[in-house]
Length: 336
Image (cartoon, rainbow, N blue to C red):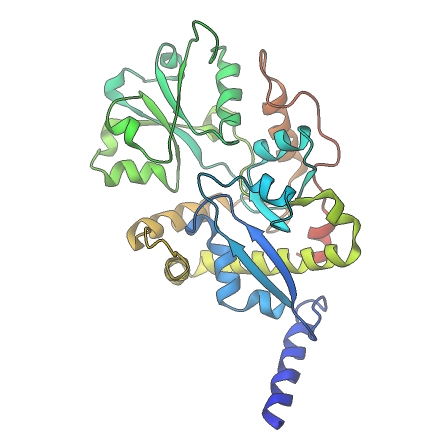
């Protein structure tokens, strides 16, 4: 009994030390839906779970991997999650369609999205995109691409589009097999898949969205507007955000250990240590540049993203500036 009492006392001290926000008596359940499969893109959340940061915060967090057939906004709208990781273009488009997603923290400060092209396709600059086939992910990932093409003045639909859009699967085969001149890649994932498949970097040319002035905010944490009306849920979300950012800080500073933790959570067994090690290194770069601290959504970056999405000449991603699409209330309560 004495050991049990000491254990309970220790748990109470740990919870009290986490900003005074945790309730040591019982862990609060919370479900996080990821945007994609288990990989280093989400290392901070898996690290927070493995290192006990969520437990210290009085939380019992369930992390649900995503996949090609899983739409985070649909999951949370259906009650299957409390928080989702999503890209802002997708979240804002979804909000305009009636699912009231709200950004409560912004994990990535930079975009990792780019087009990777074969030099032998004749593409040297964006002016060479016209008449070419470009691979694009859909399910919400197409919005930044469509905004960029619109900015360039290229049509992507109709009887005679300037660009032939290939609905890209979640692999790099279209580039390897010359089915497309360029494909969508992330700096931390698919680009390295191309290299690992045997194509030398010297045979490739990349166009980063950041460099083209069309970057939009990617991995952020979103919940539903209704949840933010409950003070207890706001407290729970604040503890979650604080513990998650602690997990990200640890992951960046201990990348090899973070990769091992990710691999331990990969039920599919599809991920490799080599690829995940490259990924965590590139992911760390996307977390850099926060204006006020980890998880802080920079209003200027938000406005830039909205501008990219709304200023399309022919087919803008969103038709009007969103209202209430983000809040600093949770971040401020987290004390970051």
